Image (tube, rainbow, N blue to C red):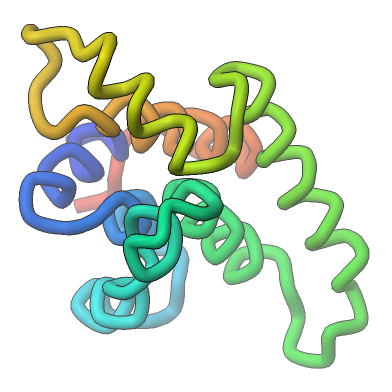
Length: 141
C-alpha cells in the first residue's frame, strides 16, 4: 500500500488532518490510533471553522515530528521546512485556506475521484511530504 492509498483509506472515515498524519504514522513515535485521536479536531480548518487547510496542519505535525528535537534548538529549521511545504501547496492549489479550497473542490469534483471532494488536497499534501522527507511512496506494512 502506498502512503496515498493509506491516506485515502483513512479519509473514508477520518478528516483531512487525520488522513494526512495517518499516512505517516510510522514516523510519529506514537500508535496510529493515538495520532488519529490527537488530530480529530483539526479537520476542515481547525474545528470545522474552515481556516488553514487541515492537510497543511497535518503536514506541519508530520514535519515537526520528524525534524524537531526535544529542546527546540532547531525550531528555525523546522519552521523553514513547514513554510516551504505550505508554499508549495499554495502554489499548486492557489490557497491555504479551507474556506477557499473546499468550494473549489466541490465545484470541480471529478466523479471518478474516489472519496470526498478534498481527497485531492490530502493526496497533494502526502506527495509533498513524501518528497520533502525523501521517503518511498510505499507505506511500510
